[in-house]
Image (cartoon, rainbow, N blue to C red; front, side, top):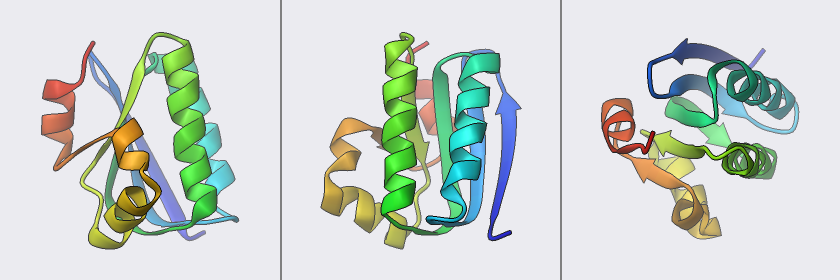
Length: 114
């Protein structure tokens, strides 16, 4: 598998670390993880993208779906540490204006509304 996911539940948010490549074949795994994280740990979600090396439109779709699901339940989604190729996609598509992007997980958690 080209994608690894790790979830950590904190007092005010759940962090899902995404490592590898997020594409048509791996996006369903992140979609399922995000749904389960929000269901089990609450709708305040930080996606740690520090180790995500590639993302295509399927990955963008999962991020949008996560944002919609979390906000529909009174929560928020933010992204932490996107690498330059991923950050470029977020900026080009304008998704970085819809979903907050932070330089690291700690900053995301500190600035993330509860």
